[in-house]
Length: 226
Image (cartoon, rainbow, N blue to C red):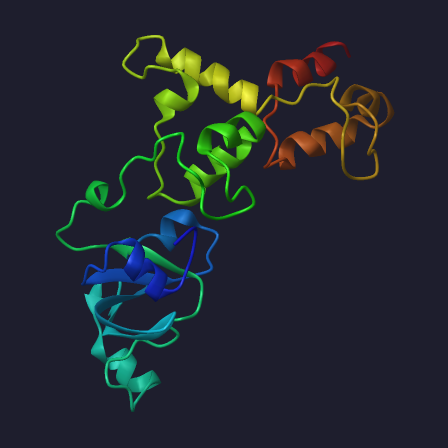
């Protein structure tokens, strides 16, 4: 079911519960993708056949049932949800069921059954590639990990915010002017060296960067020296 899947795998992963609400969306906007806005389907019945099968239910537009959509787009449809075996489906809701009951917190010694680190424990992955664990948690709102056991941070401790911030900085270190740029026409040079050659490029970089965590104080020191 991670991060997007077909309706049948979602059905199995939630314990064969019905009804459940799903959406097929390729949107990069996570809030929209997992929301009830737009077109969703309420799955009322699943008829497995091998790995796939048929799923039946009705369409909702902005969380309001809309039977006209199915009649217009699929006039001969008998309630079967189209493309149920295709990918890109996400779980939106399981009515009247506590999601914590369906998706318990994963222990750090559990083996990941999917993805690039398939077959490794969560603890080992965090030691080897901690960014992947953060990406995993960000990508799937239903995937939860015992983060206290993973990091040793007691989130009831008054110093927990500071400790967590330190952990974030360790996993995602901020970019400083001494770091070497790994892209673009100045690839291989430090940001400090680039500033000496082309200060307008650094200004452009700071305005347009959307991926790197920037040490603002470090970069501001460049302008203070001028």
